[in-house]
Image (tube, rainbow, N blue to C red; front, side, top):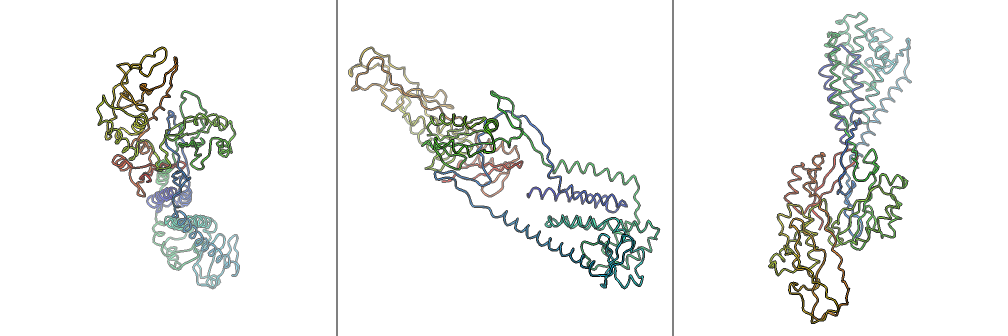
Length: 596
């Protein structure tokens, strides 16, 4: 709303300035009358005009969680909402009070004019009705009613030039223009340009009436003396046209002006580039993204806003958080899905609904497989899995747009430092800790990796001992090449590359001397560890993308530039980003510290 008010006010200011510089003093009053009225309509209509441009973009994986206007932080007990902002309520209340005050003033002026017409004698000549008042007033007009002083009218002291002037106001329906600007001013009372525009419209009405009188052959000098005699600075009803002393000098100047037809044409043509400039600068531009075909064809609606997104978060207990709103179990998930997108049929959901699954690092992998048939039965076009995401109820940490948190980096450095201090040949790393190291390492951005401890390196594991037929006696000798590895530990395991560490597919252990006999053909299968999470963009990279889209950045409650936001993200680690977007407005990015 604020953006619309600024755009319309700027348009009106430009149009009014053009009128004051190029048109007001020219003798082309009929054209100026329509220019002023159309300018009012254009100033309030141009910000509503939208030009749509269709752009075909490749499909990318989105990792931005949708956020509403009220920021919600998810914890184990449910959503927590920040305090309500009362500023919009206060501003709307002030705006409503202004409408009430100016509306009462408008009704009062109308009532006064109607009462004067009803309670005073009237004298009708053709279509013009003269209302004779006992008050000492200057002649003024409202529609077909001309208000005159009764004593002067009966004594024939009012010159015919003045009566012709007021009759012109009535015949040309100048009161319609006045009512139009008064009603607009009722709703835009806070805009001072409306008062200037109303003054310009009324002054142009006087130009039109003056020209009509002079066209009857009245001498300009005589008519000017009459205007000086009947002009007054006293207040008249705002809805009426009357002779006003403050505009006499400008009217005398315009009476002497003669504008050639060539000048009228040239000044009229100047409006075309001005209109184009206003349309280009203050109309709305909307980009509609059309996704290019990829591996599988998914029907895409014409507008991105038609796609309905469903967010599912899974914690380590296997509980599912639907749309950041309610926790449920796998058995009850179907009933909760049926409450979403109720206005769409299953066939429509299969075209437009996208599901984003964000599991916790310790979430059961089996539950993701169990969710898939439920979603297919509900009807979805696409299922994306992002994560695992740090979503711990105990620490209330929420991972945002890539990068490890400060606590995660501290945990990684402690583990890495512990094992880097050991000689490589004697290094023994527990399976649980190597998996944790890999997970934390993959979470970090390139900048965080450079500052962190190097990933612990280990030589490759030795080959497994060959199987021996028959039973293995507790006293059987061990292969000389197989070093002793305690249960639950990994020895001599090294990632293929320090930049992308991988966990060995199996954990090897030697058989202790007192181990029971193993029958021929027995195999102890050890499940491979879960794959490391996919890498994600860093907050700095995402901030740069938002800057290209014209986003507005805030650090706390302070508005900052895109460059300042990027510098803050580079210098500080313990930060979170919340991104929101409404309709066609630029994205809003709020940067704040993590909740402790």
